[in-house]
Amino acid sequence: MYVHLMQVHYAAPGMPDELDDTALDAWRAFLTAHAHATRRISRELVAEGLPDLGWYDLLWALRRSPGGRLRVNELAREVVLSPTAMSRFVDRAVAAGVVAREPDPDDRRAQQVVLTDEGLALLRRMWPVYRRGIAEHFAGQLHGDPGELAATLRRIADSARG
Image 1 (cartoon, rainbow, N blue to C red):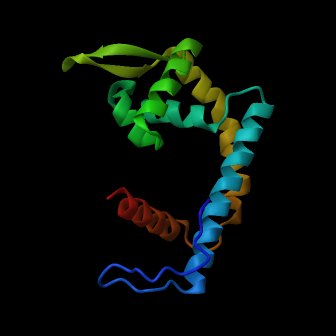
Image 2: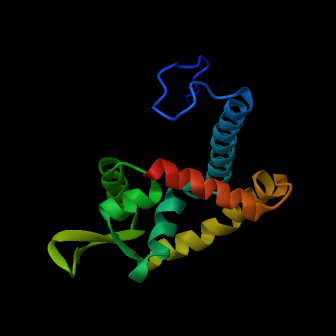
């Protein structure tokens, strides 16, 4: 987690030179909450004999994609990993039998990562633990309109995504 404690006075044209303490505090709280909540849920999954949260993200991205398949670079974007890190992750997931690599029907030079029946079964076993973690460490802490928070976080993600 990186938070600049000293203000840098090299703002882009039209941007404020400094951020107020409230904005910096919100940034820090966002980073800290995300890190602690995801680590806690990962530990809870592992305690139940399941893989950590990264595996759920991989399997869920495939589950919700058309045909349960994506190219490695598309999967990397969905899970927010570099293509190289995703390729290594996919190698581990293939070895575990939860995904397979298949030729892309639209481009025989490329491959797609495909969710297997074992991967879908693992996703289903992970969900109750993940759901409980979300309820306890996130949803249970929300006050106000969750839809407003979701919209704000989507705007942040879209701004950073570019």
